[in-house]
Length: 369
Image 1: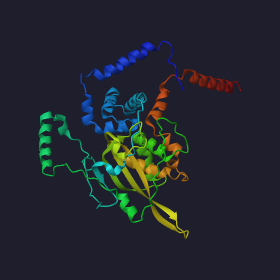
Image 2 (image 1 turned 135 degrees about the vertical axis):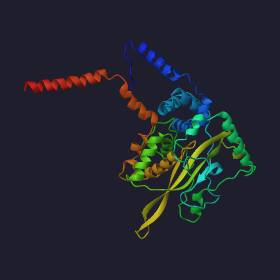
Image 3 (image 1 turned 90 degrees about the horizontal axis):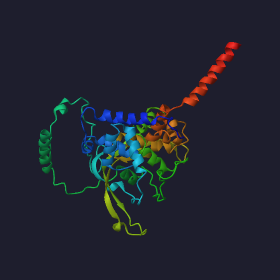
Image 4 (image 1 turned 120 degrees about the horizontal axis):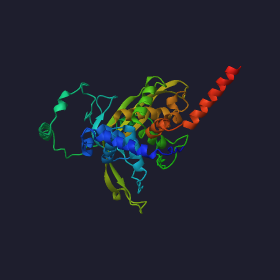
């Protein structure tokens, strides 16, 4: 639906834009894009995930431009993304090749390769740290020097360790079903309209670029009672994945000839969901299904919620809104949802006056009777 500004509104709009710039500049402080990248990693990661564009620098720039508004920053990033040419598709990435920075399991205390806590807020005291008010560059440099010196005693850090997947060991025991690889071409929802019933690749793409709060809220709704899907997190991984592309003119080239173009940081989750199924004797039997979640950057809560919704949407027959893919997928998109709500601020003079006239006419007829 298109909207046309009322005649004579150009000057007012220009004045509004100038006022917006004034509000950003009036206190005389300037925040550098590099500062946002370095100190607001979680915000940058969320913007990249919801905009489907992996660029920490551009995400930080959009945050600055949007005055810290998440939905506006995502809108800006998606608009910019739409102008970029699609030169190639990357090759399939196996998450076993992740350079892991953090890896935990809620299912097992001892997992092959061990648990790696990494950097997280999970173990911090949620108390205001007033020492940050007087933070200085010299103090930070001193702390970094001591920390890096301590790291040298841990190891040289030159050995790359790849961690096995927890679920693979359960598959070897025959506790989880093994599926054949589906090498069909995935749906690209950035180039094709989302249609229903949606393919699983389309569902996963929509979930991973969904608004973090919306995905978390619906995952929580399912966990709390709307379906009561209560998974156990098999594994959370945070780390970098190598991305490579093939030669555009050589479709059947060997994997060793692919071109490495860089790394992306992701959070990956595999959740184990208990389900009751009928065995051959028509008796109820407990089995586990896997819910999967992955998103740009370190955004573990969203990835866990995504894994819950992934398993929910595999069972559309359930009578809960969190199992309805149209309900879930059409309402978690940040640009669509905030845009449609924000459009209510635009002029609706004619339609509202028409409703008022109808009400006046009804009330006039009522008085005459």
